[in-house]
Amino acid sequence: MPKIIIGVMGPGKGATPQDLENAWELGKQIAQQGWVLLTGGRNVGVMDAASRGAKSKQGLTIGILPNGDRASVSEAVDIAIVTDLGNARNNINILSCDGIVACGMGAGTASEVALAIKSQKRVILLGCDRETQVFFSKLAPTGIQVVETVESAIALLQQWVSV
Image (cartoon, rainbow, N blue to C red; front, side, top):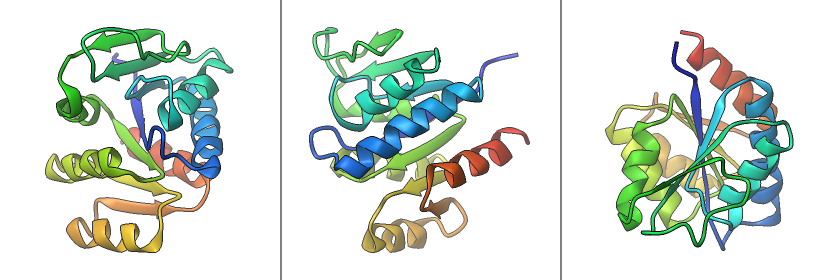
């Protein structure tokens, strides 16, 4: 049986301290569930924090890199997939996941949420401002779930992946 892959998407350099804290805790709890963590793989922001959180609990981490080399990979990524696709790699991120959590928001994260909506995948928004919540909820009234805590995100993911 294939492993469950959970994607944590979020800003790189623009991540807030709260985004980083949430991402680290998400990574940790994803690993505790026995799920595989998938991120954008770089050594900054939400990607790095989630990967480090998962590694703190001996979780398996995958990073889908936008570049043509491993120069920017997080040292907490076990499997680095080099794409040389730039932002087009966001589609790989989304299509490879069984569950998706947007932890904070930036332009790249917004594109990933939009790709998830187009692919009819459900997305959890964690730590996103009200305008972001309203915008994405209008695009996918049943596909977007807004939560305030990591525990709520994990509870939703448990429901989604058990079906």
